[in-house]
Amino acid sequence: MGMKKILVTGGCGYIGSHTIVDLVENGFDVISVDNNSRSNPRILEGVEKITGKKIKNYKVDLCNFDDTFAIFQENPDLSGIIHFAAYKSVGESVQRPLLYFENNLLSLINLLKSVEEFKIPHFVFSSSCTVYGNPAEIPVTERTPPKPAESPYGYTKQMGEQIINEFSKAVSTKCILLRYFNPVGAHPSSLIGELPISTPSNLVPVITQTAIGKLPKMEVHGDDYPTRDGSCIRDYVHVCDIAHAHTLGIQFLLNQQGPMKCEVFNLGTGNGVTVLEAIHAFEKISNLKLNYSIGPRRPGDVVAIYANYDLAKKKLGWQPHYSLEQMMATAWKWEQKLKVDEKFYNGKFSELN
Ligand code: WQD
Image 1: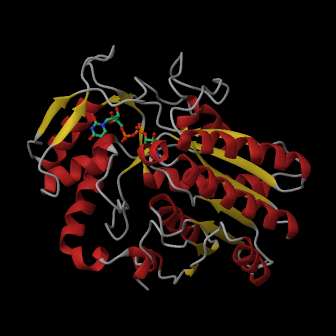
Image 2: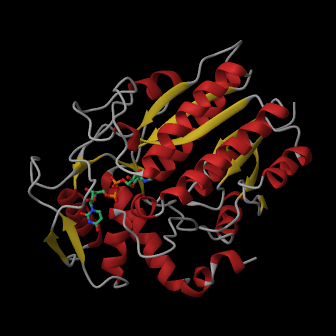
Image 3: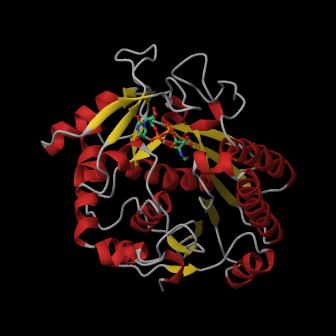
């Protein structure tokens, strides 16, 4: 039996590239589709250095149905799809809701139309804890009722889950939804990592860019919340742990006999960490004093959220391994590597070949 072939959409992105590494290391044949509008194709050179495998990327916009369909015509033997490609900036989605609804939902629908036409047997969707909004109870389980999203980005994840749920009832494709908490860190080799396309808004890249001097200072968005130190609580999870969950998800689907309903899994460590604790963990591993001040709350922020991941542990056999210190250490090592490779990654993304 030949290697199973998986199509990773958004394969040049942060979680996509780490997932390709994990899939290849677990014996899968992988192709990528990424229009590089918000990613750097050179990240696949890092994937190749780690795995020894050159990954083919189709530079295609999934909002173009014909171009998307053509990928499936060329690869009718696909065993599964892992769908990461989407815009993901909460703030931008508030300013440009139609851009987000069109891009994130039209690309998904085009993909699912091709999955149906070619009877692709397995589909994994990149979802987010953002679907829970401000949960009444924590840790959240997969049965915690979703709340109204805090942003159009969050709505595209909720609507994406609903579209896939209904799709999976009508076809034989087996689907799962993976709800990430806060993916952070980088591959231990520092050959791949997060590449924010503009000034980052997420905590860990802001910390590392402040530490390396790309940002003059950073602000803690509020320390007057009802938490142990007043700052917000999140469930930070290493991107390599998230990546391996996708490999386990595909293997879970491959092992399912007969029809199954769409299943959803939380991917978090179950360990709630405050913003100040995250900053102090970074200061400890880097032996640096971070230049931060306490600023006002950020609108739309959830006070506290962290995961119950028992279901992923039980059904996928998933267990997060990286500690908070390792998350910070790999993120910091990657930021320092970027400083050295500045020119390599600095060109305009969509013009890089
Ligand atoms: C974490 C905490 C901030 C920056 C978002 C999306 C979610 C997912 C991950 C895509 C918050 C605080 C941050 C700073 C700060 N994205 N912070 N100063 O908001 O939990 O989740 O990114 O899937 O869907 O909603 O992550 O890293 O932006 O913020 O104090 O300069 O760090 O207020 O409490 P968030 P984040």
